[in-house]
Image: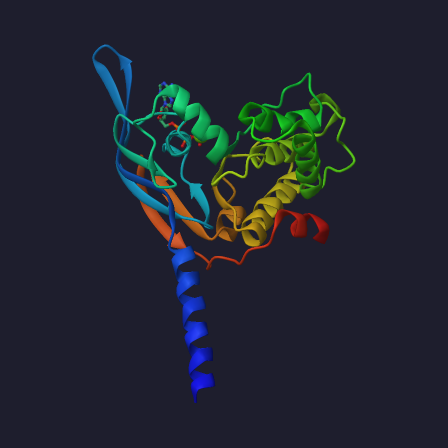
Length: 268
Ligand SMILES: Nc1ncnc2c1ncn2[C@@H]1O[C@H](COP(=O)(O)OP(=O)(O)OP(=O)(O)O)[C@@H](O)[C@H]1O
Ligand SMILES: [Mg+2]
């Protein structure tokens, strides 16, 4: 009797803990408004009033027509742009009130941003590019940084290209280095603005699969702007923007369980 009770009790605790983990809000936007001043008396409203919560471990695709405010929203989420009004919380911290210097540190530690065009440093090889955010951060030794950079390149299946410079890599390979770089400081959120926009469909598919694995296996929170219908429907949640407003917000699948980076690297 007592034994059975103990087991049930343990199961309950595990379930509750899982629910707690899954319920953690990692990014919260409240009453976001974004206006642009086009000239002295012409203002354009890009986002009128948007609120959204993203849970830790979610994989969100943001879709919508060109000019609907997807990039603007993503930049606000990542602290790269400030809203005209409203509040942004990242990992429990209100980031819209931070100074530029504080924001640089928060971005370095908590956000991994992947642009449509990779923005790798052309003079540096793959390992150096991935090392850069860790060098700026200064919390790891040189050896730890290089080892981690190589581990992340292995993770994105670039183990044979450590010393290649961006010009010696294909578009898809460059984008995978950019993803490894985005993961350098174990960010809370990975944000991608059409990261496969300039890739052929096969390379784009590889990059999608990588995001998918990062999310499913590492429980990495991923938010990606995409024009690709198939990819958008493979995400866990799809938010469609029209005129800076959430036209629909659909949960497509439940969240996955954790793996470590090393386990994930060794699996492929
Ligand atoms: N620097 C700027 N100056 C003037 N207008 C801008 C500027 N940046 C964005 N806009 C306007 O804001 C609106 C939203 O732009 P945003 O780049 O967020 O759209 P998007 O959904 O990412 O579009 P796309 O799919 O084409 O990338 C557009 O109408 C655009 O013209
Ligand atoms: Mg855009």
